[in-house]
Image (cartoon, rainbow, N blue to C red; front, side, top):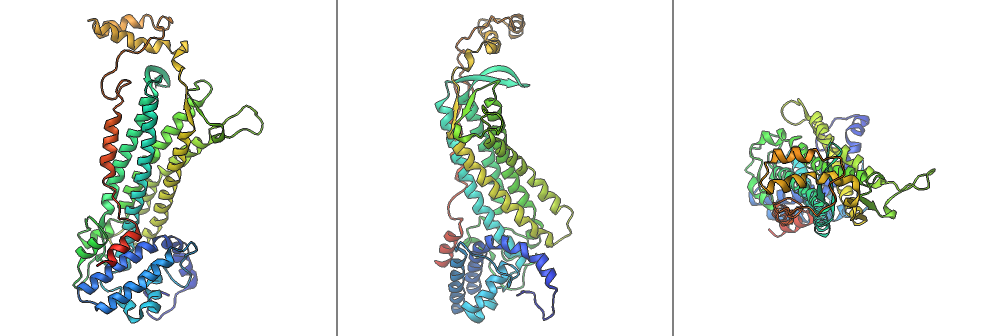
Length: 445
């Protein structure tokens, strides 16, 4: 069944090519499509384009379809081209002739774009709270291990003394930046394109502000042409946010692998979180972190995929945009699988507390010695040269580090500032974005 059917025939092979894979993706958009249709029906009645009775018929029918989408075996069958045709044709059985009026004042172009905006907004909310939970774990570990010293590295060489408290806190702060990027992407999606139709508006007296309010959007996509021009841009921004979080997880995983290696042995992973070798009995492999790193690195390539798919397209809607759905769904699925993995992996990570007793790290205290001389009035460059002459002699024994007082140092990790920043960022991801919550809101009108 095709909403664009004009009485002719179309090759089944063409329909199969253009629609078969898209139906499975559209099934995930179905709840969002239905709540968008509910808001549209309420608006049509307010604007006197349908009667109150027709609105009630449509809302009742849409509510029934919404319940169907909640079933575990829900799918859009081959009798329908996409989610939009599934909704409209199924409504004919549930709402009668009123079903034919639901498409008044809109196109599938603004309809699917509204679905995607609602989906991105909801998924961003869920991802934000997962990232916050991970950051909270890292901050707890930072507090727990704030007194445990470790070497800091530059150029892969032991450089200066630092602490596990700072190490864990630094990744919590990285997640703050990831939340900031995600908030920006979510803000772009928090605009209603509904009513822009095929990209050039409609002569019917619709109320776009009303549907935007009913669906909880912060604002409108103002100009109708820009609604279609924005295709690919929002997807690129949100996959960029996902890539940013993936970069944090990949870097942390790489450092854990590095610190687990026999030459360092700074951290240990619980045996039940490691794998072994089929030939080497002694092996305890960090496969979990290696796979997290690999999958996160794949996610970092996704924004480029979106950019290439949408580069140089002509004005208005193009069917190329259909392929963006799979990219967005896979990206969210990927990161939403990896963050919980990282959370339980951290629970099995233990840190070594006597690292700095190893004589090979004596020389990293040369900076401490130079700073001690500076506090006694020696110019830093003179102190630097004096200490450099002793480097490698083994004369720097393991002392307690001098007091570090500035924010972001061993003695003051800045944990509370990070906690405060996370708290402020998460406020931008309020509740009310799920299809179920939107359905209740629309039906109260």
